[in-house]
Image (tube, rainbow, N blue to C red; front, side, top):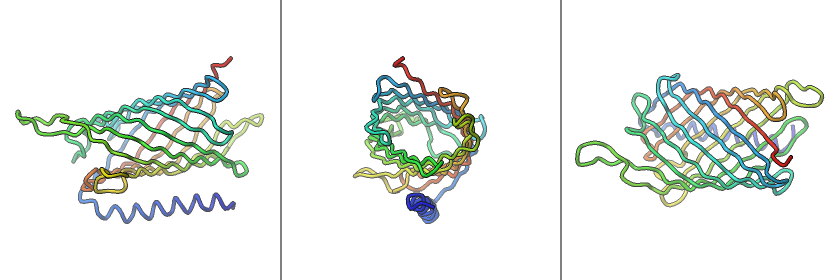
Length: 254
C-alpha cells in the first residue's frame, strides 16, 4: 500500500475517533432516515474554464419531511492536470424536521466559497482531495411581538470543508470505466471569531457505487452517514442517508 493511501486512511480513522469523542458532549441526540436527490453538472467552456451547477432536494424520514434544498453554481479553472480551483455561490433553505427538531422554523442561508480540488492516482485507485472555504450568512430567528418566530437577521460564519474520496473501477469496457465503487469522508469545521461552541459542524461518511452510461451521463447510489452538531453544541443528529446522484459532463467547445 502506498504512503499517500496509508496517510489518507489514517486521516479517516483519526476523524472517526475525534467524532466519537465529540459526540459525548451533545446534550440531545436525534436520528432521521434521509433520502437525498442530487444533481451535479460540469460544462467545459474553454480548455481551462468550466461552469458547474449543483442542486439537491433532501428529505428526512423517507419522503415524509423536507430536510433541505440548495442550488450551487460555480466557475472552475483547471490550473494543472491534477489541480482545479473554483469560486461559487450557494443558496440553502433548511427546514424544520425531526422530533425533536434542531430548527424551530426554516433557516435560509447564502454563502460564497472558494475551493481547491486535487486528484491523483495510485494504480487504478483515483484519490480526490477537496478543500472548500465557505463565507456564510445564516438566518437567525427571533421571537416577534406577536409571539411568532421569524428570521430577524443574518449572522456571518466561516466554515471549512475537507473531503477525501476514493474511486475504484469494478467493470471496464474498452478501457472505459462503466461500474465503479466509491468511499470517503467529508468533515465540516467551524472557524473564526463567530464559530459557535462546537468545532465540528458536520461529518459525512460516504460509500457507494456509480455507473457511467457514457462520457456525458453518470448515476451514483450512495450510503452516507451524516452527523450534524448545532451552533450551540447542544443538539446532535446522526442520520442514515441514501443519496441518488445524476452527474453530467458536457464539452461546449465543439
